[in-house]
Structures are given as C-alpha cells and as structure tokens.
Length: 475
Ligand code: ADP
Ligand code: MG
Ligand code: ZN
Image (cartoon, rainbow, N blue to C red; front, side, top):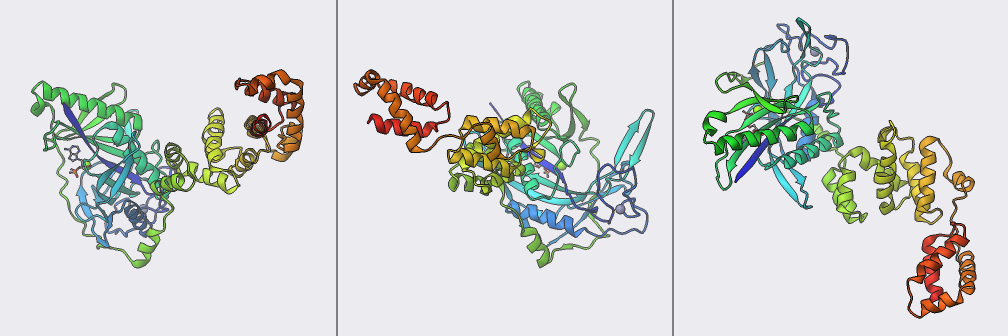
C-alpha cells in the first residue's frame, strides 16, 4: 500500500491598484504595453519602491492564517532569462518572507477538520505575457511587475480531495479578505502541485514532482490521480529511481497526462542573492493595524451559524464557502427571516431558480431583502410555502410588491383560530361515524379530516393551524 504526499504553492494575484514596485495600474485587458514605465520595463537606472498596499494585503493573509508576520522582511533576486521578463530576474522573497509559518484548517467529509501547516507566503513580481501569433510572438508587459503572493503549504495533504479542500478554503479566504479577485480563468489564482508517493509506514518522503501552473480544480484532481498512478506503478515495477526524479511537469489537458517540462539535469540555476536595489521591508504600527482589519472568516462564521443560528453544519459550510453567499444570507436574516427557512429559500429555491437563468447571485433579480420579506411571510403564517414559491416565480420575472401579490394572487392563509375552527366543526358534524372510528383508534383518519378542512377552506387555511386545532377538537 502506498501513501500520497502533496504540498501546494499557490500564486495569488493581489488586487492592488498599482504594481508591486512602480505606480503603473494593474488593470486587466488594457492595450498591450500601456501599463508600463521605466521600472517595470527594467530600463537601466529605474529603481523599485515597495507598494505599501501589497505589503498590507500580504500581512492580512498572514494574520488570517495565524502566521508569524515578520516586521522586517527581505527581497531576493531570482535570475532567469525569459522574453516576458525584461530584467532577466524576478524580485521575490526567499529566506526571510513577510509571512512565515501559519495554518489552514480544511473540512473533511466526516465533519472533522484537519490542520494543514503553512511554510510561508511571500511577495513577488509577476512576469509579462508572451502572445504567439502564427509565425511570430509578441511580448505584452502590462502584467510585468503585478504583485503576487505565493502561499506555500507544508507537505501535509494526503490525497487529491484534501488538496482541493485546501485550495477552496484558501480561495474563499483570500476573497473574504478582499486581497485578490482569485479569478481562476484569468489566472489570478493558480498553483503548482507537488506530488510524491511512499510505501505506507515509511517515514521518509518519496521524490516529489512539481506540476506547474494549474488553474482548474478538475485538472488538479486529474493531474494528481495521474501522477500517483505513474509513481506507484514505477515503484511496483522496480523502476522508481529511473522514472521518478525531481522535475517540473505540465498537465496536458488534451491527452490527460503529465509531461516532463524540465528535468533535474537542466534545472535552472537561479543564482539567488539579496536584492541590492531594495532595503528591508519594515512594517509600521499603522500597517499592522490596517492589516488586522478583517471580516469574520469562514471557520468563525460556520461556528457562529451552528451555535447561534442553529443551522446544520453542512448547510453552514455550504453558505460560508463563498462570501457572496454568506453576505446574501445575512441580508435575508436582516430583513427579518428565520434562519431555518432562510437556508432553504436561499440554497434551494433562489439558487435553483438562478441556475436556470443567466443571472448569478450578485445580479439576482430578487434581492436579499426581498427574499427576506417573502420568507418572513412564511415564518408568520401569512402565506404557505407553496404560495411563496408562486410569488418567487413572479419576482424572478418582474419587480412587484409582495403584499400586493399576496392579495392579487389570493394567497393569504387563514390563520385565525375562530375561522378555522368554524370549518373544522362543520366537517366533524358532517362525519359523525368517522369521528367515532377515529376516537375508536383509527388514527389514520386524521389525514382525512385535515384534507377535508383544507378543501373546505379552498386551500387557504394555514395547514399547521389546521393540524393543531384538529388535534385539540378530536382530543
Ligand atoms: P522549492 O522551493 O524548490 O519549490 P520546497 O522545499 O520549498 O521546494 O517545496 C515546495 C513545495 O513542495 C512545498 O509546498 C512543499 O510542501 C512541497 N513538498 C516538499 N517535499 C515534498 C514531497 N516529498 N512530496 C510532496 N510535496 C513536497
Ligand atoms: Mg517551487
Ligand atoms: Zn511600471
């Protein structure tokens, strides 16, 4: 039996207004090479200055993952030649990063949590982009110098599902912290996946292979499965040493295999050395205070939902997994809805309807406060769940006043005891034998009385009230 060992290096593009070492904007989709200046073009003599906003955002992540936020960190120069990097080096943090150690908790299927230790999170500048067109290639340096936070985990993950849980948790956290858009399609949240296998019980780790630049959960899962199988088979076939060596591989989405990109033999010599153009990054008390300003994070939210709102853990995990969903939910509650009904009406009724349209939660035609108003009408018995569904269908199509819809659609429930009792008594008087049978032990007949009462009220009686009052009358 074999055990899988995984460690992740996640590159998060920070959503600062300007680049990491110059004041060029970071806006996406501009005309090529317009967001550039002598610094990010690496013209001789232009000097870098650290972006305070980027440092604060890195620190905020640090505090969120219980890390050691270093008050004086250093930058290093990593040399490599590539056309999209005009300086022929990348400024990064190697040995004394701004964020060190830390922990992230992932939720396992059995409802427990697992602690994943963190190595560090460091600031570094992104490269530009090469654009290949037919027989020639172009270089766009708009992205060159954009701030990245590379977040490195310890090799604490033991299977693909844990790796995905970890990535989802980190993704959600950086979005709650508002330090990154974390848009995977646009590449602002991408990761390198390190995978090795070892015989179960062996303490020493196996040789790790790094799969670079993954930006889809599906592909990450598939790539891990492929690597685990490849490495395990090499072990079993007695060719582990020949087949598995420290190298960088790429996931071929078409063939569904990982392929060697560069091996150990050709491994680049990065010639790391302390960046001579930058002094240590020293943080101020004001920066610390600003970095510590953060919203309630998913773990705390889930705990509060379960303990205070009495919501099922599973539902709390679903709702808190995305800040948009959690904030929408909280706005439904602010409009007066009960938490129990709000969960169902958000996750099943509204999300179910949105899925069938081109709308998302953030463009939902039914606002959180509107849904909250509707749910509180179910809570207080004004309308039935069925009636509320009909109203929600209308609200998905057009703006309307809920009270007016209740009137015009005739959905008001009768919850008044007197009115319902009057109907109940008529039904009981008309069916003396059935009442006798019921009292004689034929309890099944209760449903018959409920049905008759509902029918006589033309469906307008509050079913819960009908049940209560019938029980009372029948003793
Ligand atoms: P480098 O800086 O050369 O990429 P590191 O030692 O910093 O190397 O490790 C990078 C990543 O690889 C980390 O996420 C770490 O957890 C992971 N890692 C290290 N050893 C292993 C291993 N044997 N199997 C799987 N992942 C590993
Ligand atoms: Mg690496
Ligand atoms: Zn610039």
